[in-house]
Amino acid sequence: MAEILGIGCSHAPMILNPPEEWTRMRERIMSRVPNYEPPPELMVDRGGDDWLSAHRENQGRLAKAFGVLHDRLHGFAPDVVMIIGDDQAENYQSDNLPVFALYTGSEVEAYPFHRPSARVNLWNGAPDTRYSFHCPSAFAVALRDHLILDGIDITSSTVLRGWKYGLPHAHINPMLFLDPDGKLPLLPLFVNCYGEEAGPGYPPRPTARRSYDLGRAIRRFLDTRDERFAVIASSSWSHSFLTHRFGGVKFDLEFDRRNLELLRQGRGSELARLTPEDIYLSGDHEFLNWIVALGILGDRPAEIVETLDAQSQISFKVFCLWD
Image 1 (cartoon, rainbow, N blue to C red):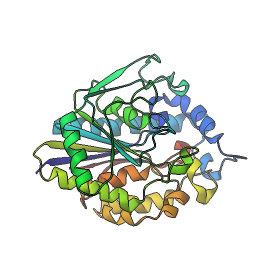
Image 2 (tube, rainbow, N blue to C red):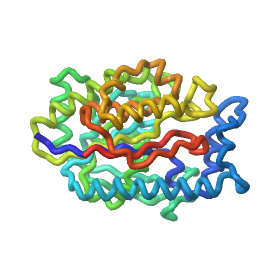
Image 3 (cartoon, one colour):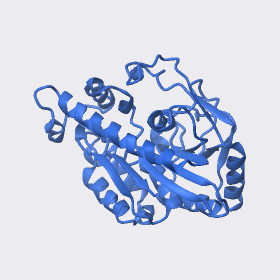
Protein backbone atom coordinates (compact mmCIF):
# COMPACT_ATOMS: atom_id res chain seq x y z
CA MET A 1 0.00 0.00 0.00
CA ALA A 2 1.38 3.38 -1.01
CA GLU A 3 2.25 6.03 1.57
CA ILE A 4 0.37 9.23 0.73
CA LEU A 5 1.04 12.90 1.46
CA GLY A 6 -1.56 15.51 0.52
CA ILE A 7 -0.91 19.18 -0.28
CA GLY A 8 -3.39 21.92 -1.18
CA CYS A 9 -2.31 25.30 -2.56
CA SER A 10 -3.14 28.10 -4.99
CA HIS A 11 -1.90 28.64 -8.53
CA ALA A 12 -3.27 32.19 -8.92
CA PRO A 13 -1.22 34.13 -11.51
CA MET A 14 -0.47 36.94 -9.05
CA ILE A 15 1.55 34.59 -6.81
CA LEU A 16 4.37 34.94 -9.36
CA ASN A 17 4.38 38.73 -9.07
CA PRO A 18 5.91 40.98 -6.41
CA PRO A 19 3.24 42.65 -4.25
CA GLU A 20 3.79 45.97 -6.01
CA GLU A 21 2.11 44.40 -9.05
CA TRP A 22 -0.93 42.92 -7.30
CA THR A 23 -3.30 45.89 -7.58
CA ARG A 24 -2.58 46.19 -11.29
CA MET A 25 -3.18 42.45 -11.69
CA ARG A 26 -6.50 42.67 -9.87
CA GLU A 27 -7.67 45.61 -11.94
CA ARG A 28 -6.78 43.79 -15.15
CA ILE A 29 -8.63 40.62 -14.11
CA MET A 30 -11.70 42.43 -12.82
CA SER A 31 -11.95 44.41 -16.04
CA ARG A 32 -13.51 41.22 -17.46
CA VAL A 33 -16.65 41.90 -15.42
CA PRO A 34 -19.14 44.15 -17.28
CA ASN A 35 -19.93 47.39 -15.42
CA TYR A 36 -17.68 46.33 -12.52
CA GLU A 37 -17.96 48.36 -9.33
CA PRO A 38 -15.62 47.57 -6.41
CA PRO A 39 -17.58 46.12 -3.46
CA PRO A 40 -17.23 47.69 0.02
CA GLU A 41 -15.38 44.57 1.25
CA LEU A 42 -12.54 45.36 -1.15
CA MET A 43 -11.87 48.70 0.53
CA VAL A 44 -11.34 47.28 4.02
CA ASP A 45 -7.56 46.87 3.69
CA ARG A 46 -6.89 49.60 1.14
CA GLY A 47 -5.14 51.85 3.64
CA GLY A 48 -3.40 55.01 2.50
CA ASP A 49 -1.22 53.27 -0.07
CA ASP A 50 -3.83 51.56 -2.28
CA TRP A 51 -3.43 48.10 -0.71
CA LEU A 52 0.38 47.97 -0.99
CA SER A 53 0.95 47.31 2.71
CA ALA A 54 -1.76 44.64 2.70
CA HIS A 55 -0.31 43.05 -0.42
CA ARG A 56 3.16 42.94 1.09
CA GLU A 57 1.84 41.27 4.22
CA ASN A 58 -0.17 38.73 2.23
CA GLN A 59 2.74 37.98 -0.10
CA GLY A 60 4.86 37.26 2.95
CA ARG A 61 2.23 34.91 4.34
CA LEU A 62 1.93 33.19 0.98
CA ALA A 63 5.69 32.67 0.68
CA LYS A 64 5.90 31.32 4.22
CA ALA A 65 3.04 28.88 3.55
CA PHE A 66 4.70 27.62 0.38
CA GLY A 67 7.90 27.21 2.39
CA VAL A 68 6.13 24.92 4.85
CA LEU A 69 4.66 22.87 1.99
CA HIS A 70 8.03 22.70 0.21
CA ASP A 71 9.82 21.39 3.28
CA ARG A 72 7.15 18.82 4.04
CA LEU A 73 7.13 17.62 0.42
CA HIS A 74 10.88 17.18 0.17
CA GLY A 75 11.07 15.68 3.66
CA PHE A 76 8.54 13.06 2.53
CA ALA A 77 10.78 12.25 -0.50
CA PRO A 78 8.00 10.97 -2.76
CA ASP A 79 8.53 8.58 -5.66
CA VAL A 80 5.67 10.26 -7.53
CA VAL A 81 4.16 13.74 -7.25
CA MET A 82 0.72 14.05 -8.85
CA ILE A 83 -0.37 17.65 -9.38
CA ILE A 84 -4.05 18.18 -10.17
CA GLY A 85 -4.82 21.34 -12.11
CA ASP A 86 -6.90 22.63 -14.99
CA ASP A 87 -5.90 23.62 -18.50
CA GLN A 88 -7.59 26.88 -19.49
CA ALA A 89 -7.56 26.62 -23.29
CA GLU A 90 -3.79 26.19 -23.14
CA ASN A 91 -2.89 22.65 -24.23
CA TYR A 92 -6.43 21.36 -24.62
CA GLN A 93 -8.28 23.41 -27.22
CA SER A 94 -11.26 23.06 -29.52
CA ASP A 95 -9.94 19.96 -31.27
CA ASN A 96 -9.45 18.01 -28.02
CA LEU A 97 -11.46 18.80 -24.88
CA PRO A 98 -11.20 15.98 -22.33
CA VAL A 99 -13.00 16.08 -19.00
CA PHE A 100 -10.06 14.34 -17.29
CA ALA A 101 -6.61 13.75 -18.80
CA LEU A 102 -3.47 12.10 -17.41
CA TYR A 103 -0.01 12.92 -18.68
CA THR A 104 1.87 9.71 -19.52
CA GLY A 105 5.00 11.13 -21.15
CA SER A 106 8.51 10.83 -19.72
CA GLU A 107 9.31 14.52 -19.44
CA VAL A 108 7.61 17.90 -19.60
CA GLU A 109 8.67 21.53 -19.63
CA ALA A 110 7.11 24.89 -18.89
CA TYR A 111 7.70 28.59 -19.54
CA PRO A 112 5.85 30.35 -16.70
CA PHE A 113 7.04 33.87 -17.50
CA HIS A 114 5.94 33.97 -21.15
CA ARG A 115 2.66 35.71 -20.28
CA PRO A 116 2.78 39.52 -20.30
CA SER A 117 1.34 39.51 -16.77
CA ALA A 118 4.34 37.48 -15.54
CA ARG A 119 7.10 39.55 -17.12
CA VAL A 120 7.65 41.23 -13.75
CA ASN A 121 8.15 38.26 -11.43
CA LEU A 122 9.76 37.30 -8.14
CA TRP A 123 12.54 35.40 -9.90
CA ASN A 124 13.45 38.15 -12.38
CA GLY A 125 12.97 35.45 -14.99
CA ALA A 126 12.97 36.25 -18.70
CA PRO A 127 10.00 35.20 -20.87
CA ASP A 128 12.03 32.32 -22.36
CA THR A 129 13.02 30.86 -18.97
CA ARG A 130 12.39 27.11 -19.10
CA TYR A 131 11.66 24.68 -16.28
CA SER A 132 11.95 20.94 -16.89
CA PHE A 133 10.55 17.93 -15.04
CA HIS A 134 10.97 14.21 -15.49
CA CYS A 135 7.77 12.20 -15.29
CA PRO A 136 7.01 8.64 -14.06
CA SER A 137 5.75 7.34 -17.40
CA ALA A 138 5.47 3.64 -16.46
CA PHE A 139 3.56 4.50 -13.27
CA ALA A 140 1.25 6.84 -15.21
CA VAL A 141 0.48 4.23 -17.87
CA ALA A 142 -0.30 1.64 -15.20
CA LEU A 143 -2.58 4.14 -13.45
CA ARG A 144 -4.36 5.05 -16.68
CA ASP A 145 -5.00 1.41 -17.53
CA HIS A 146 -6.28 0.71 -14.03
CA LEU A 147 -8.67 3.68 -14.17
CA ILE A 148 -10.15 2.62 -17.51
CA LEU A 149 -10.67 -0.95 -16.32
CA ASP A 150 -12.15 0.45 -13.10
CA GLY A 151 -14.81 2.34 -15.09
CA ILE A 152 -13.20 5.80 -15.35
CA ASP A 153 -13.08 6.95 -18.98
CA ILE A 154 -9.91 9.01 -18.79
CA THR A 155 -7.87 10.52 -21.62
CA SER A 156 -4.06 10.33 -21.68
CA SER A 157 -1.38 12.35 -23.47
CA THR A 158 2.29 11.50 -24.01
CA VAL A 159 3.08 15.03 -25.22
CA LEU A 160 1.56 18.50 -24.80
CA ARG A 161 1.13 20.09 -28.22
CA GLY A 162 -1.73 22.56 -27.92
CA TRP A 163 0.70 25.43 -27.46
CA LYS A 164 4.46 25.89 -27.17
CA TYR A 165 4.69 26.73 -23.48
CA GLY A 166 4.24 23.25 -21.98
CA LEU A 167 2.58 22.90 -18.61
CA PRO A 168 -0.29 25.34 -17.99
CA HIS A 169 -0.12 27.80 -15.14
CA ALA A 170 -2.28 25.63 -12.88
CA HIS A 171 0.57 23.13 -12.77
CA ILE A 172 3.75 25.15 -13.18
CA ASN A 173 2.97 28.07 -10.86
CA PRO A 174 2.92 26.00 -7.64
CA MET A 175 5.95 23.99 -8.76
CA LEU A 176 8.04 27.17 -8.88
CA PHE A 177 7.65 27.23 -5.10
CA LEU A 178 7.51 23.50 -4.39
CA ASP A 179 10.13 21.97 -6.71
CA PRO A 180 11.71 24.55 -9.04
CA ASP A 181 14.73 22.36 -9.73
CA GLY A 182 12.60 19.46 -10.93
CA LYS A 183 14.05 16.98 -8.45
CA LEU A 184 10.83 14.99 -8.03
CA PRO A 185 8.97 12.85 -10.63
CA LEU A 186 5.97 14.92 -11.70
CA LEU A 187 2.65 13.42 -12.85
CA PRO A 188 0.20 16.07 -14.14
CA LEU A 189 -3.53 15.38 -14.06
CA PHE A 190 -5.89 17.75 -15.90
CA VAL A 191 -9.50 18.53 -14.96
CA ASN A 192 -11.91 20.58 -17.11
CA CYS A 193 -12.90 22.83 -14.21
CA TYR A 194 -14.16 25.83 -16.18
CA GLY A 195 -16.46 23.85 -18.46
CA GLU A 196 -18.49 25.98 -20.84
CA GLU A 197 -17.07 29.15 -19.29
CA ALA A 198 -13.64 28.29 -20.73
CA GLY A 199 -14.86 29.16 -24.22
CA PRO A 200 -17.08 28.13 -27.13
CA GLY A 201 -17.44 24.40 -27.62
CA TYR A 202 -16.21 23.39 -24.18
CA PRO A 203 -18.16 20.54 -22.53
CA PRO A 204 -19.61 20.99 -19.05
CA ARG A 205 -17.26 20.61 -16.10
CA PRO A 206 -17.45 17.26 -14.29
CA THR A 207 -19.65 17.01 -11.23
CA ALA A 208 -18.19 17.05 -7.75
CA ARG A 209 -19.36 13.45 -7.33
CA ARG A 210 -17.56 12.28 -10.47
CA SER A 211 -14.41 14.16 -9.47
CA TYR A 212 -14.48 12.46 -6.08
CA ASP A 213 -15.09 9.09 -7.75
CA LEU A 214 -11.98 9.63 -9.87
CA GLY A 215 -10.00 10.25 -6.70
CA ARG A 216 -11.35 7.07 -5.10
CA ALA A 217 -10.39 5.07 -8.20
CA ILE A 218 -6.86 6.49 -8.02
CA ARG A 219 -6.75 5.48 -4.36
CA ARG A 220 -7.75 1.92 -5.23
CA PHE A 221 -4.78 1.81 -7.59
CA LEU A 222 -2.46 3.22 -4.92
CA ASP A 223 -3.60 0.56 -2.49
CA THR A 224 -1.98 -2.00 -4.82
CA ARG A 225 1.36 -0.14 -4.93
CA ASP A 226 4.23 0.55 -2.56
CA GLU A 227 5.44 3.96 -3.81
CA ARG A 228 5.61 7.07 -1.69
CA PHE A 229 2.96 9.21 -3.38
CA ALA A 230 2.30 12.94 -2.98
CA VAL A 231 -0.81 14.58 -4.41
CA ILE A 232 -1.03 18.36 -4.88
CA ALA A 233 -4.45 19.99 -5.32
CA SER A 234 -3.73 23.19 -7.24
CA SER A 235 -6.24 26.03 -7.19
CA SER A 236 -7.67 28.92 -5.29
CA TRP A 237 -11.26 28.36 -4.20
CA SER A 238 -14.00 30.92 -4.87
CA HIS A 239 -12.99 33.46 -7.54
CA SER A 240 -14.46 36.97 -7.51
CA PHE A 241 -14.99 37.23 -11.27
CA LEU A 242 -16.69 33.81 -11.38
CA THR A 243 -18.95 34.17 -8.34
CA HIS A 244 -22.30 34.49 -10.05
CA ARG A 245 -24.11 34.75 -6.71
CA PHE A 246 -22.57 38.22 -6.30
CA GLY A 247 -22.47 39.28 -9.93
CA GLY A 248 -18.75 38.53 -10.29
CA VAL A 249 -17.53 41.30 -7.97
CA LYS A 250 -16.47 39.40 -4.82
CA PHE A 251 -15.75 35.82 -3.84
CA ASP A 252 -18.02 33.71 -1.64
CA LEU A 253 -16.18 33.80 1.68
CA GLU A 254 -19.00 32.26 3.71
CA PHE A 255 -19.27 29.28 1.35
CA ASP A 256 -15.53 28.67 1.40
CA ARG A 257 -15.17 28.97 5.16
CA ARG A 258 -17.89 26.38 5.58
CA ASN A 259 -16.07 24.00 3.24
CA LEU A 260 -12.76 24.72 4.95
CA GLU A 261 -14.21 23.58 8.25
CA LEU A 262 -15.21 20.26 6.66
CA LEU A 263 -11.60 19.74 5.59
CA ARG A 264 -10.33 20.66 9.05
CA GLN A 265 -12.65 18.08 10.58
CA GLY A 266 -11.75 15.33 8.11
CA ARG A 267 -15.15 15.36 6.41
CA GLY A 268 -13.95 16.02 2.86
CA SER A 269 -16.17 13.31 1.37
CA GLU A 270 -19.19 15.53 2.10
CA LEU A 271 -17.94 17.98 -0.54
CA ALA A 272 -18.77 15.41 -3.21
CA ARG A 273 -22.39 16.45 -2.60
CA LEU A 274 -21.84 19.92 -4.06
CA THR A 275 -24.11 20.46 -7.04
CA PRO A 276 -23.12 22.08 -10.34
CA GLU A 277 -25.24 25.07 -9.28
CA ASP A 278 -23.37 25.35 -5.95
CA ILE A 279 -20.06 25.50 -7.78
CA TYR A 280 -21.32 27.91 -10.45
CA LEU A 281 -22.88 30.36 -8.00
CA SER A 282 -19.93 30.38 -5.61
CA GLY A 283 -17.22 30.72 -8.26
CA ASP A 284 -15.57 27.56 -6.96
CA HIS A 285 -15.02 25.96 -10.38
CA GLU A 286 -11.41 25.02 -9.65
CA PHE A 287 -12.30 23.48 -6.31
CA LEU A 288 -12.94 20.34 -8.36
CA ASN A 289 -9.15 19.86 -8.40
CA TRP A 290 -9.27 19.61 -4.62
CA ILE A 291 -12.24 17.26 -4.68
CA VAL A 292 -10.28 14.77 -6.81
CA ALA A 293 -7.49 14.96 -4.23
CA LEU A 294 -9.98 14.45 -1.39
CA GLY A 295 -11.11 11.25 -3.07
CA ILE A 296 -7.52 10.03 -3.00
CA LEU A 297 -6.90 11.10 0.59
CA GLY A 298 -10.16 9.98 2.15
CA ASP A 299 -11.60 11.54 5.28
CA ARG A 300 -8.35 12.63 6.92
CA PRO A 301 -8.30 15.91 8.86
CA ALA A 302 -6.36 18.63 7.07
CA GLU A 303 -3.67 20.72 8.71
CA ILE A 304 -4.53 24.27 7.67
CA VAL A 305 -1.22 26.05 7.12
CA GLU A 306 -2.61 29.40 5.93
CA THR A 307 -5.64 31.09 4.42
CA LEU A 308 -5.74 34.40 2.56
CA ASP A 309 -9.29 35.72 2.72
CA ALA A 310 -9.07 39.43 1.85
CA GLN A 311 -11.21 40.41 -1.13
CA SER A 312 -8.17 42.21 -2.57
CA GLN A 313 -6.79 38.71 -3.24
CA ILE A 314 -9.41 38.12 -6.01
CA SER A 315 -9.81 34.55 -4.79
CA PHE A 316 -9.92 32.66 -1.50
CA LYS A 317 -6.55 30.94 -1.05
CA VAL A 318 -5.96 27.92 1.16
CA PHE A 319 -2.68 26.14 1.96
CA CYS A 320 -2.93 22.86 3.77
CA LEU A 321 -1.41 19.42 4.38
CA TRP A 322 -2.58 15.87 4.93
CA ASP A 323 0.11 13.68 6.51
